[in-house]
Length: 135
Image (cartoon, rainbow, N blue to C red; front, side, top):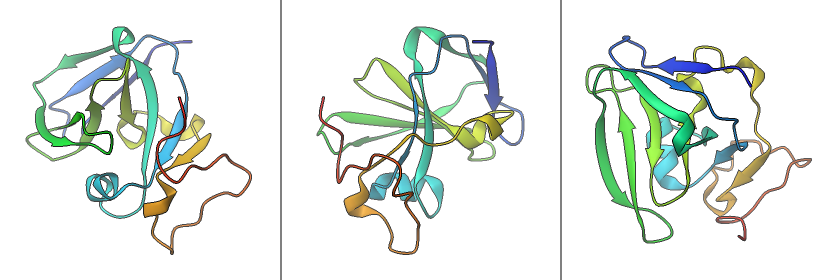
């Protein structure tokens, strides 16, 4: 995989992904709806050791996730662009919209569909889980 790059809308924070993505999904939980401003949160799963901020210092908002573990929502303090989430998992959910070119990525799975808004279509051809998928 070639390196992927992204950042916030104002350019104050930049990052790069050098590890192979582990997947792409859409999370419909209420916390992700707040973070996305409406529907689901589309994320690409980047391995922690293949992700690095290269410019700027993002801010964090910590909150207990559905698992009870703390989840940090990481965003630009200047323009508010959501960038990644951080938690106890071995990967970072990177917000697909923050990538320089998100056009090649599409969701492979939908999670937390029990919280999905009725007006947001979910592709019936993709796997979907009412909460987190089984480990």
